[in-house]
Length: 153
Image (cartoon, rainbow, N blue to C red; front, side, top):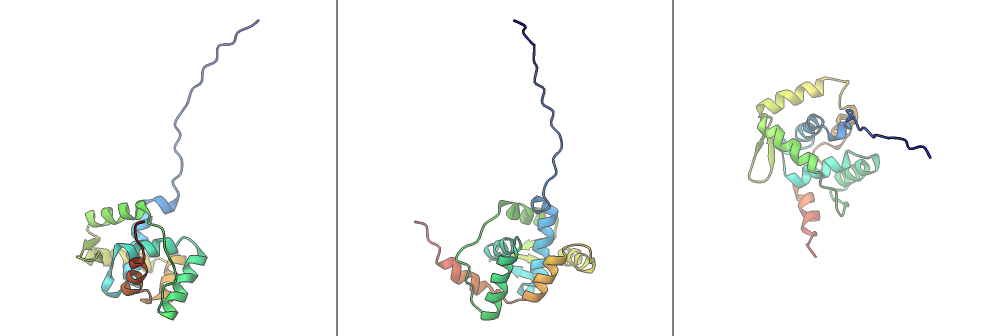
């Protein structure tokens, strides 16, 4: 019987990271939400998570458009993405966002950055279209009403 010596060798190869998981992409989305769909450039973290959740599918965007027109949010729950929290912390560290007692706000350097995003027609096209159509229709109060129904069991 013949024995063969076999050796396995593993090499790490770079793998692409989906845009959705890149901090700069999430920061851009957050800045757009604060600029285009928030009053005074401010939002709570649950509301930012709601927008992050909605931006992932057409069906979810439709839910928010309907909620804005009817002034009532029908989403019983939405996902909380750890990548969004990381992106927000990076945006604060980079001086694009500020913290408030109720959430986060766009500050001057963030406003300048988001203006450049809005001017560039090649980036965030679907997000800009959606947020323009939605406007300020999703209020903190709407989010609070839904979130107040969440209880730990």
